[in-house]
Image (cartoon, rainbow, N blue to C red; front, side, top):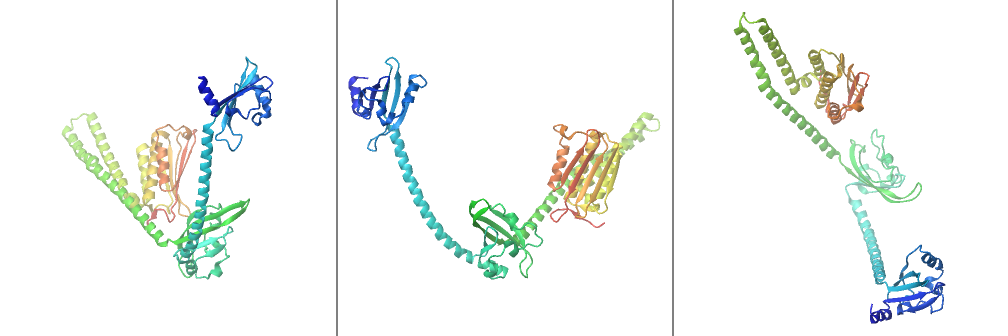
Length: 484
């Protein structure tokens, strides 16, 4: 650097330096930026910057540190900008070198902090204005609540009523004074309800639920509640705040939802039935008609062959004729299953009887169907699903089990739930070792889940498999029973 440029930097508080001897006394200082350094001959520790920092100089002297940096120094509030100092050990001279430079970046950081402080004050002022607005809106809210056509309650942490609007008083036909202080579960007791407000709001969180409520001199109605906890937790087990609950009569809405669900279910059943009928028509127009046409042709061939035909030909024609008749019978039975005729007209029990009989005839495996007479008339989409699960289970027995016997049971309990059990005495398997790509068990489980049924599989590698499917037939189920 030219001497003139260095002199300019030293005079403008841009750059400065100082040299120390081994005993940390000042030998020389240069530059206006080094005014804080003691005069030559004085110890550097006289400066507040290096007070009690002798150990740091020792780390430089021992080589444990290459440089000691002191950024962002400001010795007085009047300084235009902070400065930074770097200290190096001069091994050749056995001394130290102090280099100082103006730290403009730190000055920018300070300005940023000042700007952020101003923004924080602005945010605080805005928050105060928002608080005033909230208080004004709270007053407006009170006016709206009193004139609303919804039930509005405020509840203490112990779920006792602290506020009730005029509409709720009119609906409950009680004065405000009669309601205040009472437990909400006592005022809005649901017929036969086991889970009251206390159970629903135990977590001090928001909740949304529907509740059946018995009102004076009226049929039970359904109220939709939106409940919010407003407040803070003050300590262990202690809460400051209250619940705000808004209730709306949704009895008509629930009725409409139920009707829409029934309509959707009926539409789904109709769509399934239409698809089955389409497949049945296609099978009838192709497979069945072909088999029907084949039978007289075989008889004609036998007749044309005459009495002089070889016994082998006559035997093969006889086997072919029997196979056509059997295939035609099975095709017609399959068409009946597709149309759902057996289940819809005679119930699930009759369909399972026929399924077991066909399985035994086809495979030679003894199949026993045990049907509870109370469960026999079950029909509908869920019954059809149980039937398809039974079909898949028997197909698995035929292909994999090498069983000697199969038991197919259908029973019902006092609640009307249906239980279908399929047991075989085949070779069994380990459920954890079912080969990938075999979707039969997965498909049965998924079909059971679609109707809200439980699917329980018990299998032993030593032999034997048992499948239990328990299907609910409560008010939300689509099962229906026909009179025998």
